[in-house]
Length: 219
Length: 223
Image 1 (spheres, rainbow over the protein chains, first blue to last red):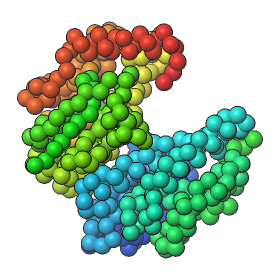
Image 2 (image 1 turned 60 degrees about the vertical axis):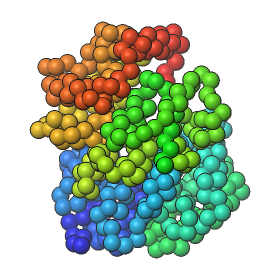
Image 3 (image 1 turned 45 degrees about the horizontal axis):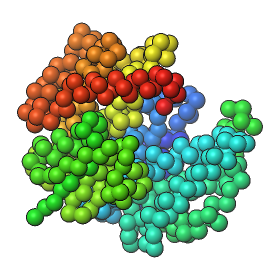
Image 4 (image 1 turned 135 degrees about the vertical axis):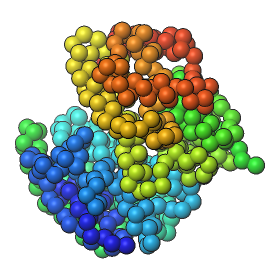
């Protein structure tokens, strides 16, 4: 199947964009990467995602696909000859969708609170560790979410891992102490090239977060 | 022998979309109505993470979150598909369903539960979101094309509740002149027999939602 005509509009720090990168790499899809400056969005981005004006956007044969989990499902359906990202059993698929949705609903908002607040609000924001613990419970004793194979939920969650250093340093947390199994899972995922090549450098992410906090007057 | 149970409330937009999915596919199911002020032990056992309805139980397997449930129904019962076959069209349908849940519904709700300046500010946000989906209806009878699909049943709550909101607040967000396609779609959608047959009673809805609006206005706490 031809894989030319694939463009990804992204921002290097985005855990949502990283999901798409992992999916494309798992499928061996060649694509053109375009870094977007989110303070000065390109005409292309505004045309391809006029409603949300956000990254990531996958442009395939000129047509845009938006929303990271929708893009990952799209990639799985188009490049379906190898490495299925979602299970084939309907109930397992539903479980995968549920947990990926849980990450989006609960984790991102909680993590933003840790990053962009200080003092008392930060204490409350540590509730995000509770969210991580629920996810750790869902992982159970399996090597990956849902079983023996790396897949959809792993992709949805592991991209937050490169942000953990920033959250820990800025939030005064020790995620490994709280969720050792989850960190072990993340390190296991990092052994996959698709993951290690897609995740940003945690120290660079930290510098970026510090810059953002200054910009928004948090520090 | 397949056993399907749906835990839901009688009025929730999220529950109705599941009812419509099951009815459209001709699936036999049992309904268990939940009182959200007094959640059953069974519900809390089935959905410990979110403790919400709707919840679908199929041969003992539990699925929650309405859009996840619909995809499960679609994967399991192949008759009357709710999603197109083409991956790009599927992605587009999923995009609009998510848009409804993340943006459209909350923005209309925000108009409904506010008044004065707050409401004035909420109206253009809702109107802009409505204009986006109006665009998607161009050249189509339903969002799904000739027949109703995922997007129709996800946004279908509007066809049900807009008239209730108008009666309670006097505000009509979907004016026939401003949004002719949406206005027409609401009529077409409501006329589909399976949809019509599961419409919750209008008067009951007015009473319920009037009480909800009043509780928001008196609490004066943004949700």
